[in-house]
Image (tube, rainbow, N blue to C red; front, side):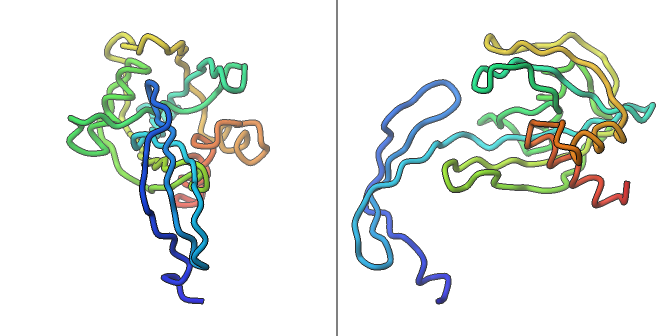
Length: 183
């Protein structure tokens, strides 16, 4: 079967629910066999995930409360792109600075993924930041509780491989970098 034979046709679309950070959207669709039905998904702005290395080779990490899983999450700085972001690298610099107080010397894009495209339209852009130094205080959103620290890349890789780095976007960043650099 050709890819175009698998496509659904969108007949209409409506936002069922809106809150800060995401919308729940309902599309009325026609399936390839002609069946008409509806499909709900979560829509959110694209995000950036930052694997930030200090000049000393440590990685900037965060611990943040995550209400959905009822625990403190260990991972990498990340956040949504805003309408006035010039590009992904600018968003990465801003999110790193706001969440951690670190400034990046350089930022390089490494990958883009759709982490859960069966239920979300999320897009995560992954970057590596180098020469990161603490230069300012955190500038957190009202609903953020974040503690900043550092870890070795080897520790992060071991946690990702062993399943102890539970934050999927962080684990993917670490493993993607490890695969690209043979680390």
